[in-house]
Length: 415
Ligand SMILES: [Ca+2]
Ligand SMILES: [Ca+2]
Image (tube, rainbow, N blue to C red):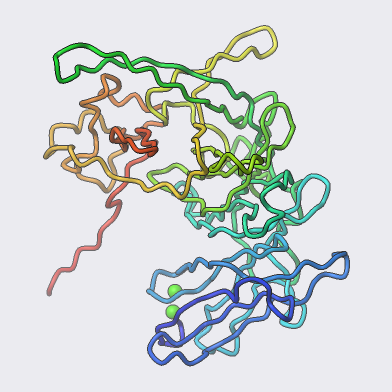
């Protein structure tokens, strides 16, 4: 931390006696409390006032000196908090917005009718490499109490940029500041694959997946732009309500932290089963562009057919943005493909290039029969994440829009 101590950062958890959310900064060596930051009482407009508590928090080092400068976390009232711990004086550590006696969040998540949406999962922070703007993404929804099992409240996936100074107001006032994304299509796809069994016979396996197409900037529906033609922000981010195209909410929510990986933003959602005899429920594995909230116009999830949609008088083919998964999926674990070989000859496929040597052998499409020639639509290189899994584990292979691994280095030269 900026006071030269190592610290543990923790929210106070739920059901606070004071009905409040607190951030605790605790000395990691001694356990002594360094600082406790109060996020304040229920707004008077909240009737009834729900109990509160701050969940898991995410630190951010703004100036790259190894000390945490900002801390983000969400609460049960839908507040997305940003704490400023950039001072070397711990007494100055505070909520970034509002005043110490009347702190305000960066944003308050509410559905279209103004009902606050609880944030119980970890907030993801990332930098847009083209603008160096910090982005914050998180989903809403909870799965803690009995009532949550049957709740069909509309929950939402949000992405907001955050380039705000510490100010006395809430920087993002509501969803009208944000570009709306929607689930355009849900449909079922069936594919067959052939394998050879132990007797040398060919067996055909049929697999079916429900897939989703999410809207993107420029679409007729859910296509609001985030920036103008010059790249200046015209919205403060985006939001995607977790409802199917029918518009009837099915209890879908995000209870595991959103993750960024290789230039894409991922989330898993959960839809609890309403039948007590049917354990598990279901959910969606979704992948979108972090900076627009929209689908990628390239094959990100491998092996799925494009979905043909009629728009006006023409038909268009969209790549899928999500797969339905039986049983409520937990956080995805991303595995870099281990069979990449030694690389070095794959440079011809790489059109990005800056900062990464061509020996970084991330391109591997050997067991796919697809790709292999750098067909990713965003100009980055392809890479793969998938193994053939069983036991209820779904392992989609991904073609990431961007490289991952080392993207910069510092060279130390003795003089
Ligand atoms: Ca510092
Ligand atoms: Ca720092």
